[in-house]
Amino acid sequence: MLIDSTLREGAQAYGVYFGAGAKRRMAELLAAAGVDELECGWVGQDGLEEFLTWAAETLPKPGNGLAPGGPALSLWCPCREADVREAARLAQAGLIQRLNIGAPSSAQHREKRLGLSQAEMAARVRGVVATAISLGIDYVSVGLEDISRADADEALALAKAAAGAGAARVRLSDTVGLLTPAATAALVGRFAQALAVPVALHAHNDLGMATANAVTALEHGAAFADVSVLGLGERAGIAALEQVAAWANLRAEGTYDLRVLRALCLLAGQAGKVPVARNRPVVGQDIFAAESGIHVHGLLRDPSLFEPFAPEEVGASRRVGVGGKSGCAALGQALERLRQPSPPGARPDEGLLKRVRALGQRLGRPLTDSEILAVM
Image 1: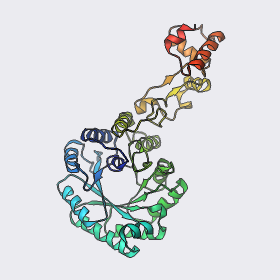
Image 2: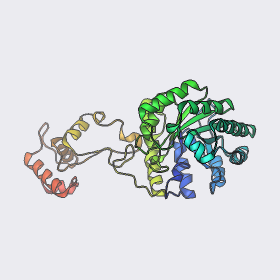
Image 3: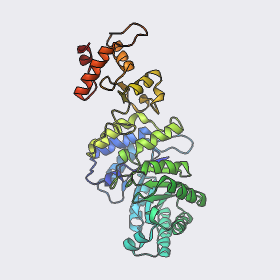
Image 4: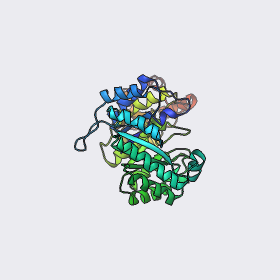
């Protein structure tokens, strides 16, 4: 299950400012994609209550456990009673269903930020979780910050303190992105086995492994993984929604509606001033484009030979280019499309293929239809 944090973690990225209109449209597309939880922001964020009011009135309501519905709406706050009381006010107004509380789990974060011992940190977690529940927040999730640098035994004790106080979920946050897939598997497996509540992973991408770690977590006992559109977030961001969702669909078809992801990523990229690379996994404009001879030959025989999923699944289309790297298969298809077919079973003229390749090499790109016809 995916917790989308585009409007919280993504909105915290350097230089990223989502306007009200962009936030609402992204929320609509995220709901249409079928994300399980929408982390809408943080307590104290400007414009938060206005957005939550709109979301509660407009987005599909969460399912009741028997039937699917829209995403649960959640907020993030630090482990402080004042912030929890503000979140409770929003929950009592029916604007959120879940609260995600961040609590340092490593000694350096706990001591340098809060000046607390391990015992004092556990006591604070128990008290803040109890306060949240007493104020009517039914679903409280506690995130253990800096988990990859924490003492594992101390972190697990803190997780048990949270669960014992009534937390419905424990979220492991790799704050500086140091986990590897192997370390993630061991860590998540240990927490999932030791706790009676679901485990989630919030993986940062500082070393480029966030998406792999999120997938690994879901394969090794995590019930949830945090994601954001294009992986937007602090520094190098977190696991990418579009990539983890595509993986989930390969594992269980129909889990998420991938067709909206292209529009969603383009919107987030434009709103956040982050260009979408043409070769970006799942949503890049060129990921279903082919030009090299062996690749095109295989695609024409059976697209699944060189594609993990059909382009239609992500709202894209396949393109075959003809140029300096092309072989007979690509040129033959182009000629047929241009109504210049060779006799059945015949290969395109070798001279024509040489001229096509030479022009493609000179121009440094695939040829247009008119350029193909011009060299015939």
